[in-house]
Length: 91
Image 1 (spheres, rainbow, N blue to C red):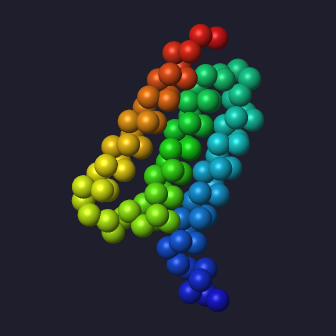
Image 2: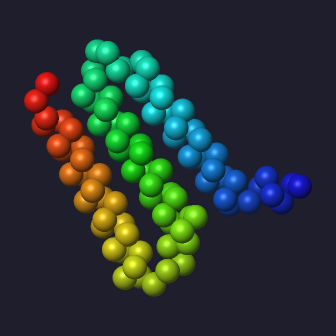
Image 3: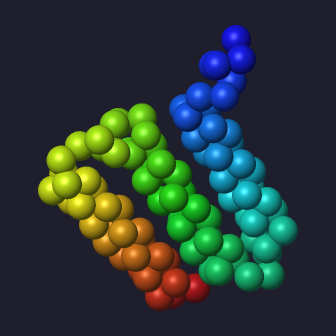
């Protein structure tokens, strides 16, 4: 049982759980007063979670360099685009 609790997937799962709690906390605390920045922060945290899932659970970490770079560039580009669109949207 101990090796299961100390494994890399369990650690990543814990980080994903903490990131979910962070998103919830940011939305609950800053959602009313600074909704735009809270939303941008939540989107960024979501993409950190996407990156962890892609690298760890889809096993892209051990993939060829070109595939890993394609995934990293996709995540970064999509995150930057969505945050920019979110912050520039009319209120």
